Image (tube, helix red, strand yellow):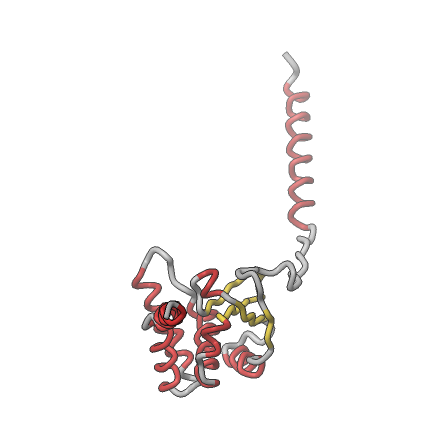
Length: 183
């Protein structure tokens, strides 16, 4: 059996080494990953086109909500056809958000309805998107985003956007196009 002082020195050595490792890990600066490039960002469709059409509105909203330094990238693509999405906001890399808009749906919208879509999606930065498992929470965040959009676009344009977005408009239009092809 080793004397107590030898075991104590061994224990103190282990404790000192553990403290040294902890201090290195704690005080070293954490590496900040580089912001993703367009190629590294999310790709939800086979073809996506970045657009700066909404930059002025996005800048106004970012300043109003007190987040002027976040980055918001808008992409247009065949999201409805490939993902059943007409519009969505995605947080990929804090503080970079991607708003994706379906190209066919976008063509159906007036300029005011397009702005309502952007403002609605920007509202999700403040209110979140709600849980996929809690329909009430999801409905609440959608309503809050709609109310937020009405701060930037007349309420009648938000209403007409909602009529198109939630009435099965795209599905109905797609079915009618298929039906017309059969004649």
